Image (cartoon, rainbow, N blue to C red):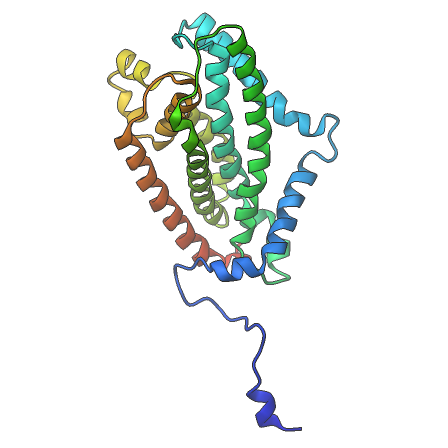
Amino acid sequence: MNTTENSDSDWLFEITPKNKFFSLNLKEIWQYRDLLMLFVKRDVVTVYKQTVLGPLWYLIQPLFTSITFTIIFNSVAGISTGSVPPFLFNLAGITVWNYFTSCLNDTSDTFKKNAAIFGKVYFPRVIMPLSVVLSNLLKFGIQFLIFIVFYGYYYFKGAAISMNGSSLFFPLLVALMGILGLGLGMIISSLVTKYRDFTYLIGFGVQLLMYLSAVMYPMALIKEKLPTYGWLVQYNPLAYVIETSRYMLLNVGHISILGLVYTFSITIIVFIVGLLVFNKTEKSFIDTV
């Protein structure tokens, strides 16, 4: 046997520890695209596989939340939504918000939930949170379809609602929410491996963040009614996404270009930090989970 010839032969793949602190190997992710699609299918099929209503839960949650917000914030608290029906106003904000929270919640437990898989076989670990973001797009698509149905209902009833040219950029807004949720989720998933308290705090934190993200009220209202605390909403990048999405879909409110630039900058920073922390944690997390 010619050992020299054997040692000089080219290997198809070489598995080595990552040396780069920041690494998003798109080529390797593309090579594992079939695995990525399998994880996406798994996320979609298994979540509601043993439930009675199945995917109908995708519809029930935003509808009941919108009805609750309409009763409490619009009927009882008297928050005005202008010419837009309150239910449709709330449904627009909740639909976009749900995509962000789904990405954040499902990626925030990546290491702990998939420790058994990570400890047995190699694949780019970032595929797991990426699959969550992609699978949640299907959930978002179903909920957005429901929004379109109610939009058509109110439109033909004569409600003063309309879309404008900026609605063509709505997919970019959704992508921005997904990337922000992915970045925050990767940061939290890395922290959860050492500090389990974050698992219990994430639910409370998301609920609190929703009230600071202008989901159920216009941004202008909080600035007018509570100017002292208005900065909490003004410096929240999620609030600009919600406000902009309502402007695109319902032609209500306004678009803040400066606010969107601020949101885009925060999103990129959070994503980069999340990837840095994620790459560092994946090297040693198996010893702490």
